[in-house]
Length: 179
Ligand SMILES: Cc1cc2nc3c(=O)[nH]c(=O)nc-3n(C[C@H](O)[C@H](O)[C@H](O)COP(=O)(O)O)c2cc1C
Image (cartoon, rainbow, N blue to C red; front, top):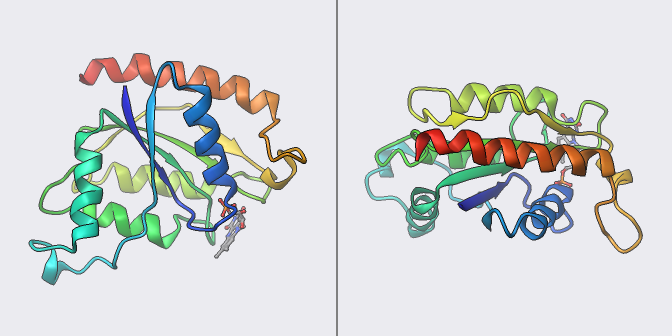
């Protein structure tokens, strides 16, 4: 299954990027994951019919995928601006997330592991402009992520890894309904 993993942090040493890379490797027999960053110009309705080439390429990749994984931190209790901006581009003209199966993973240094931003993310993904199909339940919240990597930078949180194994299988089963 071809999946785009959209990572919500542009930071060079992003933990969310590390988790996306971990998932790409761990689930390579089940999912063909390509990682994308939402590093796009700010959405402007004046240019939505003739968007910058980065936006065109970004939307093409999402359109060609069979599913989308969002791996994102929480910024100020909500969705990082870059990710929200990319979702806004996807909500207009060619609505490439419409009816696309999506699942969400989030890691933060705080104690609630992106719970607040994931609620906002689900609200946005359910909006009529986006209308993505979001895997119900299966909340992957990874708090205090800075303590979950070893000295060689491997993700070592067994409890989360076991849960991720289940969530990935749940996503694959559930998304068959829409293919
Ligand atoms: C602008 C900004 C806002 C943040 N807001 C939150 C927040 O609301 N909740 C939280 O748990 N962590 C917050 N953090 C801390 C992030 O959890 C932490 O920087 C995390 O490492 C970001 O993910 P990344 O490693 O993938 O870049 C914030 C960080 C930044 C830079």
